[in-house]
Image 1 (cartoon, rainbow, N blue to C red):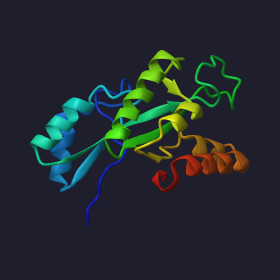
Image 2 (image 1 turned 60 degrees about the vertical axis):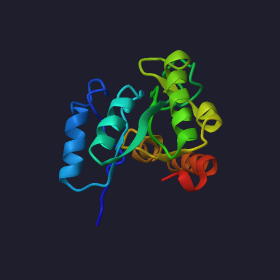
Image 3 (image 1 turned 45 degrees about the vertical axis):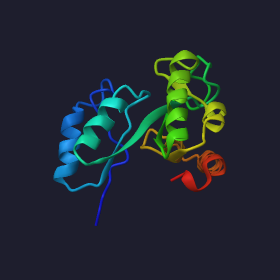
Image 4 (image 1 turned 180 degrees about the vertical axis):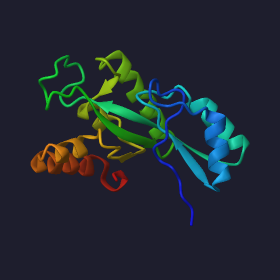
Length: 172
């Protein structure tokens, strides 16, 4: 049975990842993974090098990013928007060329329009640039997980419904 990591950080996830891209590829091959996703925090700095290294070694690269999602508008610079948080995590994976282009666009918007401690996007641009992107709810720092941890079932349902509506069968 094959297993593929869809949420992996490298040395390009500052203060979070320490894995060198060559080591990630080598370990994935060691465990006989057919593919591996690279989802660094808020950026795609390692995407080109990762896909080159993966393809050179016969591993299918999945290009992605763990986005920082602002709870309100991406230009909001206050913490009063949602439970004193100024961002949530969301894993975005390129399904095809359109998805890759949209990931690049979202990463750029995060830095040029949404930067507040982290390069943030919001629901407006996630919807606008959703074509070709597969989404997972990320980790415990994701919007749904944080709502559930705060015993806010209504917010968790609303968030899950929004992502399911925008991404349809590409939301997990």
